[in-house]
Length: 250
Image (cartoon, rainbow, N blue to C red; front, top):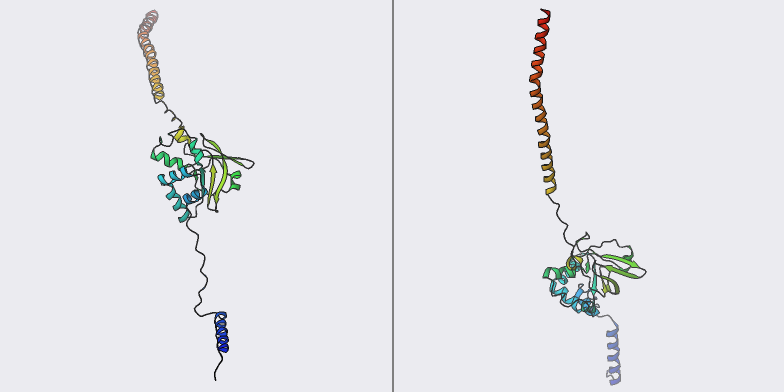
């Protein structure tokens, strides 16, 4: 039986509609979203802008690699106080170049707290605060943080500044902007070491005691000598009296 061209066309269209409406055996599931990339502090700061100098210091000192490892290979939190480019411009000319390599590392680490501090935690934080540059003991790079209303004040012993903005937070990493470079007192205003106690005090006392012993021995020896000398005439006197009495009774 012959079919008209119209019938053949209609059959073809219906067949195509049926094939597209029925799930094919080779249909692929939708691709899962790609996992988030590793946390990278320098990329976060680059995206925020105005932290060019701090980024350069993070890279040149190796602290950027250190933070990358801490954030992506452990569950430890980190808080960073990032100085803006304008804060570095306000430093005395040549300040950064005058630092040794070790001091530059300490300066960068001084802006890093080895724990996550949310904006709401600043009001209950305990001072002094340990930094990545050292512990919280006096002379070991501590920071002190206080709050007044919504203002967060930071002091290093040399620098007093405030947190001026929240750059980034994800529950493990918090980055806050500060408008002054936090200068550690141990680098920029070190305290002179306490003088060692003078060891001559004990020796002087010993010499004094020895001197006293010598002076005490002298009069003792003299009195003993006088007693020895005085005993001779006393003995003679006793003998004379005894002989006299014996002669009288005889």
